[in-house]
Length: 297
Image 1 (cartoon, rainbow, N blue to C red):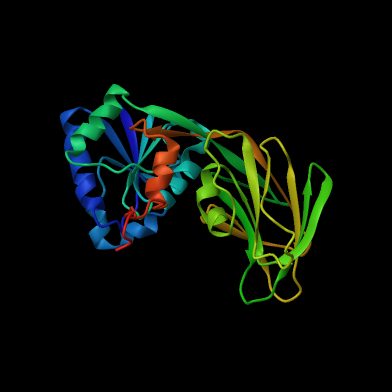
Image 2: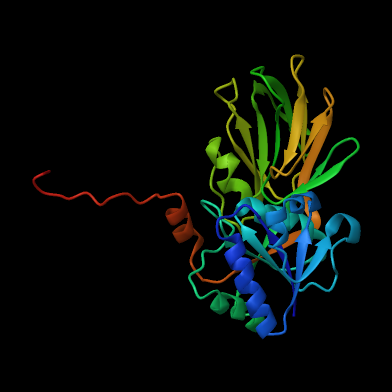
């Protein structure tokens, strides 16, 4: 089996996990590819010892097409990076959490070999997650979580003109706007007042960021709808961000078109059958201490 690894080198247990994976791979004749999107990170001497298996500089060599599975070691941010790398290749991705909340990753309990053997036996389930396609005048981006349009710096509000399927829906001032998938609905969109959407739901959500109009509220739209956003601000630059990974500056009144990607879906690997709402309750800490009844003491 050929497995690619994408790792957050700064994780507290990353090196320990990589050493365990290397030993397991040697024992089970698994071929490991250590995928480096930013080779300059390995200029630091300490990180050179993290490399296991075959080192692949993605910028020079591209994605090895014989990879059958991806292990993402880090938090949700590392998994989002992995999703952007593997999106065109339809390869399953399993995230081992080294971050904080970890909505997209799994927690593991030693021994690590038990988790890794489940990969060999294909003892897991896959959830297909839609991605967004984001078009500007001269760029195409994609996102698993969200696309964000906001000011570059300062406190100036920006003007947002929103259209859906060529119908003008709203024109408002605020700090920006988020377009999120169901996968991304538990991220920035949730913090900005958007709803939680179950992953299988065929919708996207448009969440304004601090709108200066009380009537502007998050809007859930069909996954097949085409969203167009035109933004303007005379006092600062406006930036478009995809999954917190890639940012580009927008020209004044440049149109951004956002829709569900017609081809790209991420095969997200799960190791348990825990219902989404149980995970939600746990990650968002929705259950507090149980209050006693009676005397009120």
